[in-house]
Length: 248
Length: 307
Image (cartoon, rainbow over all chains, first blue to last red):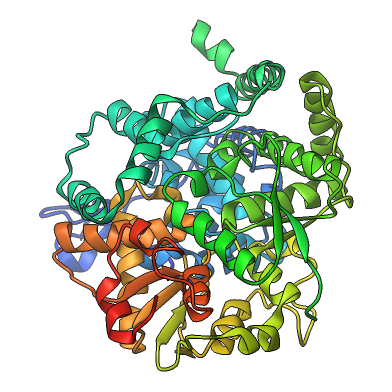
């Protein structure tokens, strides 16, 4: 698969004048199409450092732009705009505005780790995608994306009880994202299962939703984890200078 | 290489107690039929999955390390995890604890506060259910025990992402003949072939099913799964053999979703490799939990006189 490249000349950067004369020369019409300047003056010089401070982003500085990540990428194959190599370039250069054009798709990384497998520089591009998605959310560039809502619903259960019950994760995720559980594909799926399942197992699965599976004596671990998570959040906020910005 | 792993610690993980129940049942029944002893880890916890890793990778390392320390405390040097996610995470914890001082420090600190022994890298070997069957019984051992050959059954072997990637956490793979390959895995192919199955040349063995976003980005997952299903059909497969509960459930869910939402119907069946091997050893379909799968494979099994 070839490395997909983006054109930096976008339709909105092309300007054609109906009547324009410069120094007595007529530069009107299609043959005198102008391209607006791409000179960048507002670099975000902190962006790489901030993303490197978030879990997964630590090794972004190693990237030498070979493109193996994008070439291997699962999501890129279905959406050419999903381009890890390009985003790493933008982050390292500080081209924040360009990165923000793709802010609503970065979270769609499926963590298949093909990029991390292919990367000759151990950048851990999968981690960089996660760190970038979190950076966009923490900075307020995007709302909390569905993947983060899911991760939170899942992790909260693990932190509280040591285990998850997948039916509960599903219900919480649908509730938190305001979706109905009555999606016809989900209904069809459950209906098919129920028609074949013996009563005993249905009872067992039903009981699992009432009596949540849990790890015994989890209290101390739970407390230690909650404390650690709070510490991590504080470190991230400091690295991203969020409390300073919040005061503005 | 058979003869190892006669008794192993068993880490089912959360999925195998929920949607992957059939995998749990068939794994245990397969062990029983082969005379292998599996002892479930006492009071285990979630391995951290993808979701906790996304919150903080070191936290996931701690969660997995706690399970490894339980295995060690129970006197085991091998823990078997049938779920790709669990298997991957225990392996990753092992790697990080051996190579990353910061992960070691967090695990040490959390273990101390939680009041249990800190796991140290190198004490327990994590293996997948595939390694387990391959190591304990092997192809020849399986062949000798087959009662109901899978002869004529065309199988696409699907391994997913977490079984082979990223390669640095699987130092035992890619070691030449006999070892597993990270680019073209074959352990499941080997075992099913020994049970008589005809493996098709499936090019998407390690492609992604979008399991991470099964619910959070369903359209992406459906597209990826549909690609896996239609390719398996184009290869002539009757069934896709799986070895991961997330992949398995994802394929089943999105097979239905592809039909309901995209109007694309596929008929290839989806079964755990443990279910196929169990039936080849003469276990009933019910015993290996085929009725607990979301998708209905009964017509294929009837036609093939399996289970």
